[in-house]
Length: 115
Image (tube, rainbow, N blue to C red; front, top):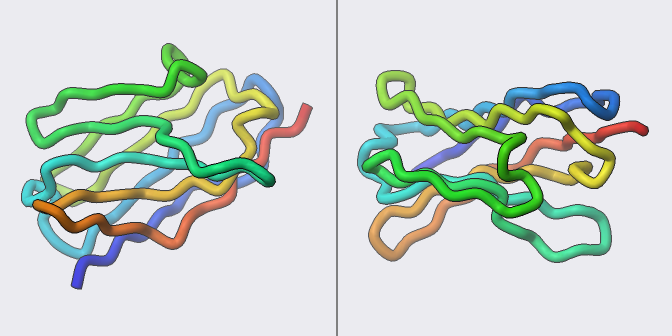
């Protein structure tokens, strides 16, 4: 059973930074891709950033240039560095991992950006 545990969320002022971490219970090198999604109040869940096993990344247009996804295979952890945060970035952020046809999710971590 794969477990993903997010951490690093919190309350920050607009313009500030946060770094989210997603620790996996096993080797993340077995995942074809890992990513971060978010769900804001009243909105659908959306992809924020994704990184493949080869290190390729893609980002939502709304965060491109402000957020950076990275992975540390030795620590079985994926990170999301979030800079220049905006109030519209407020959401619950979820870690996601794909292995073959299976998708795994973390429990989520709240990010709140005050104006």
